[in-house]
Image 1: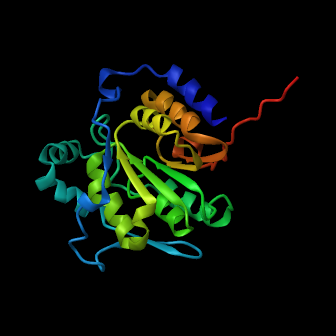
Image 2: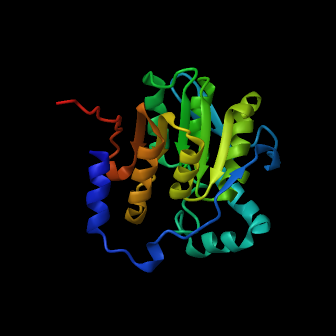
Amino acid sequence: MFFSFLEENQNKTILSSESKETEVPFLEVEAESCQENEGGSNCYNQVVLNKSSLKYLPGQDIVESLRFKNPDVYDIIEGNQSDLVNGIYEGGFKVWECTLDLLLFLEKCGDLKNSSQVLDLGCGAGLLGIFALSKGCSIYFQDYNIDVLQLWTVPNVKLNMPSSLNKCRYFSGSWKDFSERMCEEKQKFDVILTSETIYNPSYYGSLVDCIKNTMKEDGVTYPFDECLRREILRIKFRKEVSP
């Protein structure tokens, strides 16, 4: 259902040049190079779940810090007055509602096991990956914008799970480049988590390819988005049946 939804809607949409994915450098981000929480451990927001809670730095405060770190991106975000600027800023400094719903669901499901390899795809604040990290999983965090990883994702991991940094890796850039890198490393995931990542039909093809190329044969993907009417899907590979 999910893959067919993406493929059908990608074909229906006529895209302008402004909506095409812009090439950005593909990089692995080292946690040691990322800034600490300058506001101290008390300067954070909190997501309260049924059995646990997660902390995260205020996204708007991080956007303000871009004024000095990356003024070009800051001016674009502020000038557009939008949470999304296609190909430049893909909404990474906002915690979307579907992320909170998926977190509540993950508390109930049994797919996050102690040794699972988990991908937080389009991670933003990293809350999905951080929740999985708290369950003993190893996490790969991916986001389009390197500023999001350096200023928000990594500091949020440090804020919640400072002793588990050695179980995390962080990658910035496109899904296509990430998928190719994982194929080179022969890395596949038991669980892929992604929330609010299907807002732009021009990205559907690379999203589908990334999931297909990086999920284990017995793995599972949870995509969650308003476009799917807030329905949580559990995607597994269909086993081929011999005639």
